[in-house]
Image 1 (cartoon, rainbow, N blue to C red):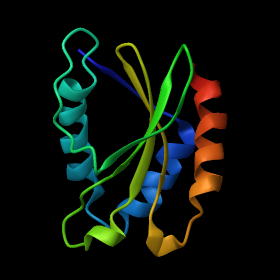
Image 2 (cartoon, helix red, strand yellow):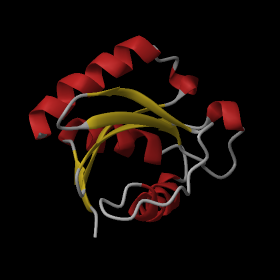
Image 3 (cartoon, rainbow, N blue to C red):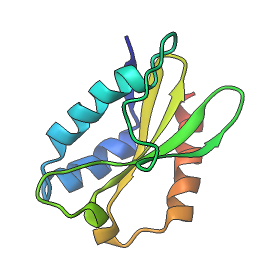
Image 4 (tube, rainbow, N blue to C red):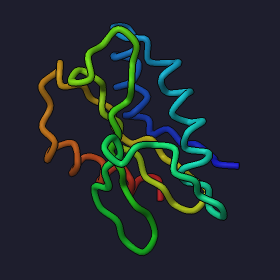
Length: 119
């Protein structure tokens, strides 16, 4: 069983996006996929490598970014979620949409800073 942790800043960012998009079902579906993809003993690939990108890693954790499929949006509008994996824990760190014109490098740095708050 995977434990999901939400960084407080992630919760605020997700709340803003939830007002505009149907984010709840997309996040729940992603959590179910994570149960298989990042299972600590028996991982099974369920997420296409085109959608899942490793941002950075060290001996303790790895940070990933995924394009979260949300209904009624075109693929280039899908929000991106940065999350960290450490054993059986997955921490949601950041969420942003290209509609909001974010910078990948800035969000990657933000995710690294936030993972240190949790792990």
